[in-house]
Length: 545
Ligand SMILES: O[C@H]1[C@H](O)[C@@H](O)[C@H](O)[C@@H](O)[C@H]1O
Image 1 (cartoon, rainbow, N blue to C red):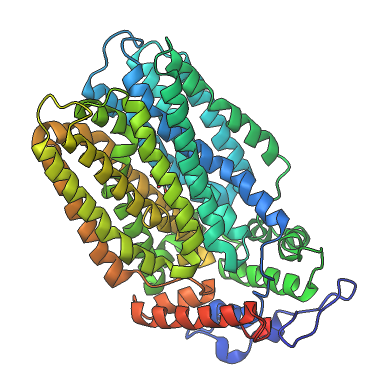
Image 2 (image 1 turned 180 degrees about the vertical axis):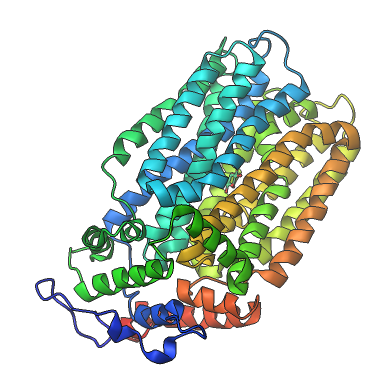
């Protein structure tokens, strides 16, 4: 349906000229057209999808989520591999070897994350994903055949580049393809694939633990999904935004037609034309005639000096920083090592519980994120992580030196960790990956790159210091320290993160333009939610939403 209630037929395309949407009052002080204002006007009535995304969007999301799976699998298997390697790399591996092997991937991912956004703008989302798969394959092959610690580290580093690139591209691709009402959930599908990859890596790790060189098989198996995705991606379309950027307007319209067709195949041609026009306006605002370097300089300046964009950057990087510095991945990487210290006989199997809890509560987040709202879900869960960590710190304090798995404090540690992971996965484990929605299109590639790099920077710090901290300031001190960081995270969310659920991308930018504005965003999101509910019950027409 169109804004005026008519359905445009495919045979009679609606002619929408740029000038008809450029009223003179929408000029900025320096005489330029204010693309944001025009876009907001055009966007009115564009988000008029029906109740469910069509199967094409689902299929795309699942294929893209193979990247999430690889990210999860490749960061997940290290926990089991570290306790299984023994002397297979030529000597007994030390704590610092373990930190190096783990953080080589984080360092690679940090570097990959930094360049991924720009690469995606130059080469396209599709080819960059295929490139990331190649890095997964080369990195895994090197590790599988490694006989020295340094070959292993080298393989993990190369794979890390793939992980960093994939961690940015997958949510970017999904959010550029997803109709806005389903954006939250579809992006979480990718996080679900990450946590699923971690569970499978843990489960295979537990199964192969006692097999001689079983860890090599564990690592090598990661090659299969990478090759599968590489082949499937050859047939995937580019996102409409990238196509418009390359001037391929008709191709962009075709992709938008697929995305916005209803489940019985009907397409509203006016929606298609408006969506693509919107992308063209944003693209023209970016001076496509400039060289890559000038465009980069311009984008960087925009990101830092336009207050709304800078606020988006603060929020996106802040959330990603909190996600990592709350210490979750120290469990992901070292839970088998920790449970070995605590006295469990089958540490890899026990740590499977951690990965399983992470995945189960990611499913809960999937169900709740658009209902409870991103901000509210964080406010309800981050403090809980802090409380669970305090419990952990206390339990470690009372744990006797040669504890066994039947010691009550060992059980408390396991339960406290599960509680911590549950709070993590329901909130901060997911929400930061909604980062693309915070940035307007012009600065989205660069903005999400910086936020992704912050994620991997935090990951690197945690991965390379956790075991040393446990040694130097005791497990109690380490968990107490992370509890403090979580509390800091709660405060950050309270003051800086506006509610974005149910808001269109244009509204989110409007909110950030005026300040951090959490109050107004709450109000707007509530109103949008009420309208959305009414529209799904058929009380108001879709065009009013
Ligand atoms: O969102 C994901 C997820 O929570 C994973 O379990 C974690 O290992 C990643 O670091 C995080 O980015």
